[in-house]
Every structure is written in structure tokens, then in C-alpha cells.
Length: 162
Image (cartoon, rainbow, N blue to C red; front, side):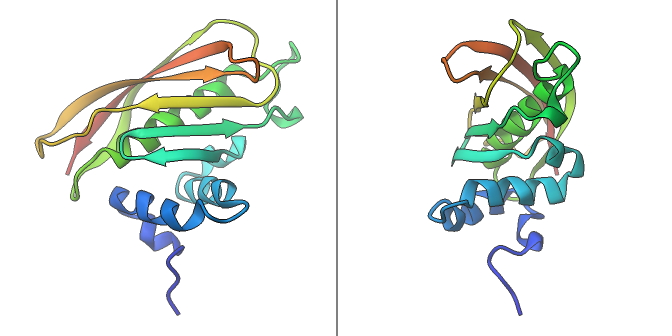
């Protein structure tokens, strides 16, 4: 029996938006899409991402501040923030690609601006990719806290190709 939410549907980046169109109407749809992303890329699951918004070339993803993502300074660990930056930029990039292309992170860097505490939201916009040629795409995601303060900025270079 086939389900529209089957993991096999997410093999192609072009399936992220159709799956989101089904899930976004469910009470925990964003959590479910975050879990699907975590099933595809297991390390992503360590921050338990929740998709808030997903449109072509745009993503907003939230992570909760829990003990499992904290450091010795009682704030969110730097690598947990990087993980949020990667999943946020990745969803924005993957939804901006035409059929037949895929992306993989080539370079990630982060500017840490202040201690991150409380629920955090990553937001990234990406231009629509029209060329089918291999290319590097540079995008950034701002990570903010509940007060609307940017606590970190993730910079990602995604290698786009067939």
C-alpha cells in the first residue's frame, strides 16, 4: 500500500513541496516533515526540526531549546545551531531546484552573534535555480530567538548538480 507521505516520495527534492502541501494542514504537520527530513539525514533529527513555512526557495524551521542541544554555558550548542542552519538552507535550496537536480552542502560556516536560548527559528530565501548545469549556490539563514533577535547566521555553499 502506497502513502503520499512515504519516505520514497522524498527521494527527489521536487517532492518536498507536494508533501508539505499535505502535511501543513495537519496539527503536527511541521513536526512530521521535520521527522521525515531526519529520516533522510539522521543527524538532522538530533535537533528535532519543525518546519513552519516551506515555499519554493523559502524555508522557516524551528528547533526547541532542550537539554540535549545545550552546552556547558547553558545555551544552545554551536553545532546544534549549525544543524538548524544546514536544514533551513537545505530546504530552501532543494525547493528552488528544477526536476532532475539535487544539492549537497559543500561548505558551511557560522557567525555566532549572541548566546542562543529558547526556541529558535531559522529562515532562508534562495533564488530559483533555472540552469541544469552544475553550480555552487551560496545562501544564508538567519537564526533568531523568540524576542526576534538574530543569534547566529549560517552561510552555506550548496553544490547543485544532476
